[in-house]
Length: 270
Image (cartoon, rainbow, N blue to C red; front, side, top):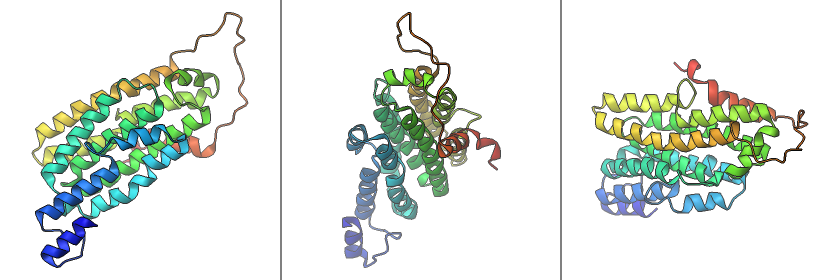
């Protein structure tokens, strides 16, 4: 509001898509970045997600980011490109770096969101439609992961180890959804990162594309850590523990559909 009022004061225009004054553009960039949780305005987001339930965390990580993302899309010509690119690189770096030593899954997903916001912000100036595609696919994959975690009642890494005995099939597909969020081919999450790197290369920003691609390896580490805990490790059990050979838990149709879409959309892309 302050940036739009300042722009109207200097230029006489109230249209938010036509900011021309540099100070208004900078204030708008900072304001939307704070709403999204871009670095260095990210400190509130991991703590809020950690204190919320899984379904509330899902809404905060996806639905509540939709309005500021649309605002970014509409005001992309008015944003400060240098400031936005700097915050994007910092978000991709800190999102991956700060998620390495976390044991709470909601905090890991929060830093994952910050890292993905870096990818969305870096391409916004050059191709805003790619930002929306990245946000949609990120929301789809994140929703699949949160629904799976909610079905297995998993909040931290130690409880993720026991999820295999509850719903084996869903836990196995959770590993693929996590790898899709990491951006590994041939899963769905590879598509937006592939398109972003391709667009940055077309804009002769090969160095920027290389840096942000290397920073995504930090996130890949803790995604692999989650996948390892979900599928390979087992919780400690006494020797006389009777293995559960049958599970009575049914898998929600919505959860199954979201997981399949988060894994198999890449072959259907143009």
